[in-house]
Amino acid sequence: MKKIKYLVLVLVVAALVLPMNLFSQVFKFSGGPSGGTFQYYASAISTIAKKHDVRVLAASSGGSVENIRTCNSGKSSFGVAYSGNVFEALHGKLSKDDNKYENVRALGFFYGAPGQLVAKKGSEIKSIKDLIGKSVGVGNAGSGAAANAELMFKHLGLWDKIKAEHLGYRGAADAFKNGQLDAFWVFAGYPNAAVLEVALQEDIVLLNLWEDLEASGFFKENPFYQKIVIPAKTYSGQDAPVISFQDAALWIASKDVPDDVVYKLLTTIYSKEGFAAMIEVHKSAKEMSIAGGLTGVVTPLHPGAIKFWTEMGVLK
Image (cartoon, rainbow, N blue to C red; front, side, top):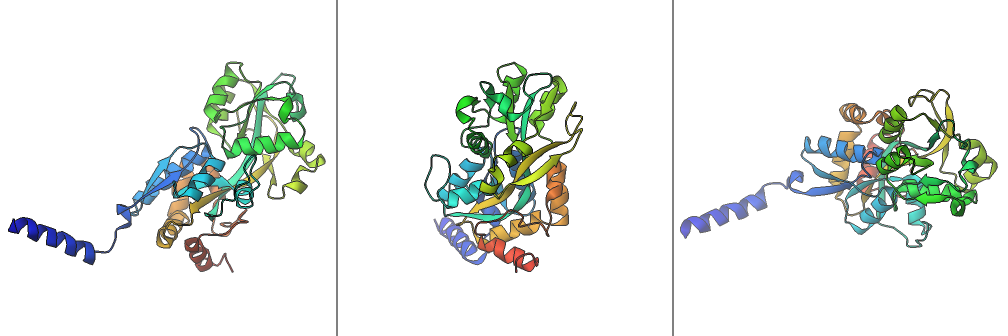
């Protein structure tokens, strides 16, 4: 009995004296669907963080909009989301959802996510307007891909004229190869793994999107989008550059994540070694930098991020 009491006393004293180890806490990082760029980022940060005594658990999810909701509720500590979705969520402007998600904070910029609309080469589909009556994979329900697809097609008056299928990238790629889809939509960094896989087995084309959307006034209504040129040869058989648009993929967090955890992770990931490790996982991480760390951020920053970006001289 005396030994037990002594052991309890030792444990209590240790708990009071020893500093809290960040590794004793687990922080859930919601990524995205299998095969999507979001999931690569979540997994990479999870791996890097553990080497620096912060335990981050990468988890798959539906994507951008779902990540905003789970970070807002505290079910996730971190996530990846598109700047446009974060802005709309903050102001109660998400599709079919007028709730205001005010507990989400931005941490930094990851990469630009371009819209990629894939069809089969030699088909009658030459532009987005040729998709009337066609089956189109638009992304998982609740994902940023699906939200952006709906926004785009609705603006052009096509949403009710296509057969929208809510499938993740890999599911859409398989359905496309099997002839169950006429086209599929990817809203992620290039090269995308699902599109790479399809291009090795099918002759594909990426549709140019910028001209039709610009003429329709789409970018005046949605100023957070930017013009992007996807270089020729990004995918097998893609002989010419493709002009599309992109949104900024941001690292987000729940406002309740401790400031020191956010600061430590930002210091680790946005370092020379962190950048190198991220690029090894996905080439789109080449866009990450200190100077461009707040690209596309139009919503409140986490206090830990304010401290970091102020020290880096990015935030004035």
